[in-house]
Amino acid sequence: MWRRAAAAFLATCLIVGPLRASEASGTPSLDARPELVSPYLQYELRLRPFYPVPSRPAGVLLHGRINGGPPLRLVLDSGAGFIVMGAKAARSAGICAESEMELVGLGSRPARVGRAETVEIGPVRFRNCRVAVVDGNVIEGADGVIPLSLFSDFLLRLNLPEKMLELIPYPRGQDPASPSSRGVTQRELLVAAVLNGKQSGHVILDTAAFCSAISREVAGSPRGHLAPEIRIGAGTGAATGQLVSFAVHFQIAGQEVIPNEVVALDLSNLSRHCGMDVVGVLGFPALRPYVLTISYRNALVKIESPQRVSMREEDGSHDAKSAAPLAFR
Image 1 (cartoon, rainbow, N blue to C red):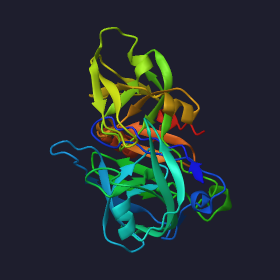
Image 2: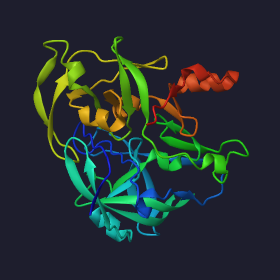
Image 3: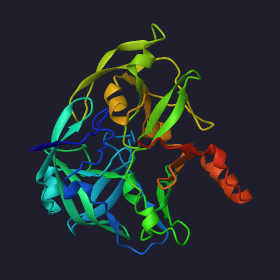
Image 4: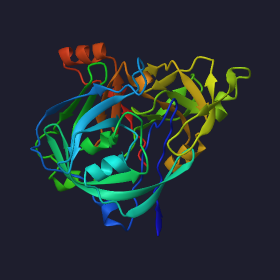
């Protein structure tokens, strides 16, 4: 029997971009939540630049092992719901994937779902982690993707300029063993935004998207500002998009983010899956200059320059007004 889990691939440049999968009911391997088995301490995980093509960084990598197998290169994906691997890498890691599902995005792609007994990322260790397995490669140049939300037991500081992911424990009494905190589920980074000062909607922050996108519906309003259609390779099938020639800027909780390369795409599948109007995706190149502070537990994310973070830490301020609420479904 096929189990359909909503997922999204959005390759806004060369190959696979964001992937995310929602909870599927009735199957233990899908429903089980990863369990942190390492001590609940502060950790710093070094990120490596990901170059699917020379001279063009398109994300960051974490090195890890699954089930004690060989080292893996996994793209850190803030749009993913669980680990996704190609079949060859999954076999090497001893993943037995049986339950079937369909990844849905610009097209569709069949996958199988299994469970990793252990996942080790540096000193941080988890058990009982879901893994989706696809035929062929998930993404050229890497063994798969790993979700940022895997670390949701912690307050996260994703410092992209310094290529560092900090895992910061919550105050005593709010550790992962606390019953009040175990209900936190894995979610995408979806925030309210205003596009070009007039179009309100929601934007997905996706560290695995190779460039940024806006919905074709929004992009089509200024006539004569779209280039001819181009073919875009996506993890769930090829699609067509158009390079946007007019300036695009997003306002998110007082922070203006201006992506350099933007493609106009049909984002209606994302809107349907999220249950709200998705007007854009901010990919890795747009997010690369910033520090993202994410609290899945409190449903908040901050987008700040490194200088702003340093100033805030020096004067001891928290600046809660600059945090954008995550639009959890």
